Image (tube, rainbow, N blue to C red; front, side, top):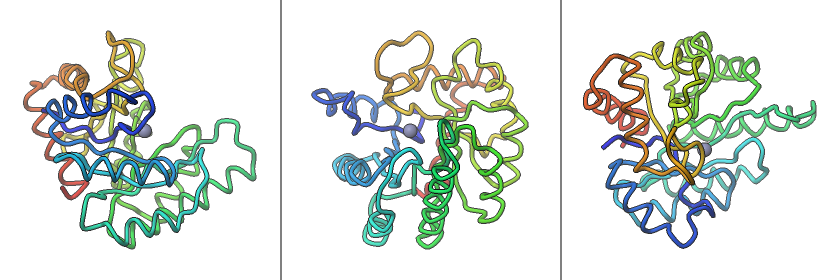
Length: 248
Ligand SMILES: [Zn+2]
């Protein structure tokens, strides 16, 4: 069983099949951290976590969504002791973002970093085309956290590692042309590496339809092959790392 550091089982892709998929995915992963991306999905992620052993929740507002961050703070304040293990996914996404939008995203990101710090939670970061501002903010605030769905270069990974981040790779790692991510994977030390499904997105090579926990074995085996280690040894490291960063 490889722990899944990041997934969205509240997504409409799982309507009508959610209970089956979640049960099968938990049987395959043991631990799953389900992530919100706005206030409604954060409440939904928490409700799902409350229903299943092994399912945990990350609450936050994604840069491409809007919402009241005080709701996220309220969730953390009242539920930290229960199943909220992180603030996320939060971050910066500068695709089609003008200056005003970039500034709005930075403000929302920083407010949520401050919430995570207040409640001693790690953050789960989404970053697209915003690496300069991202590393500047991480250097200034030094949150503990995870760069999710990483597909960047080994150099970017090394910079994030120096800033204390854990780095999580999803199914896209298994695509034959993801050579940059392959090199980045090999630059991450054993104690900072995580894997994820990002369900329902980014199914590993050879799979159709929404991704889910039963596909994580393929990503794990592929990562183990690239790192020149045995799948069961990598699985043990991933499980330790997931438990450590999320405090599970
Ligand atoms: Zn995600």
